[in-house]
Picture 1 (cartoon, rainbow, N blue to C red):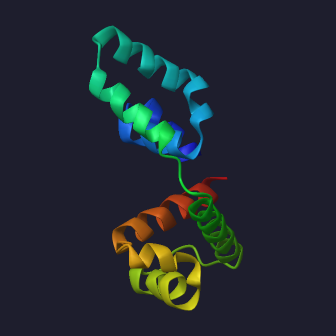
Picture 2 (cartoon, one colour):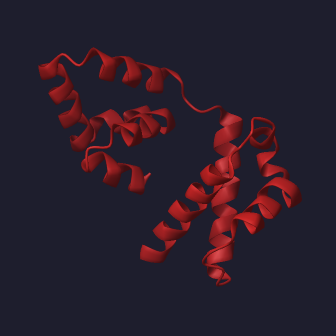
Picture 3 (cartoon, rainbow, N blue to C red):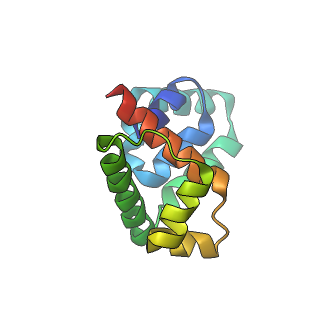
Length: 128
């Protein structure tokens, strides 16, 4: 979530919509409320349509639980000194060995998305 907020501050609307899907209370954040004010002034209906969809389209509880499991696994890997896994290692770990992502794999979970999630999480741990 911290990285999403950083990206929102940099003007990334996609990060704003992703954060709203996770937690709709994000609209109280100064960066988000500033962006909403700007969209209001510009009468940016497209922005509000996407924001509404993001708020109404929250992640399913099962998906949130899966991401929590992934975060825990990354935390253990980080503590064990494994700071980066290859794409093949990520696929093997999450899609074959651990059934955490079985639903995502069936929905064609892309390797790039898994890589981005892993890099984001490991980068957050490296800086904290």
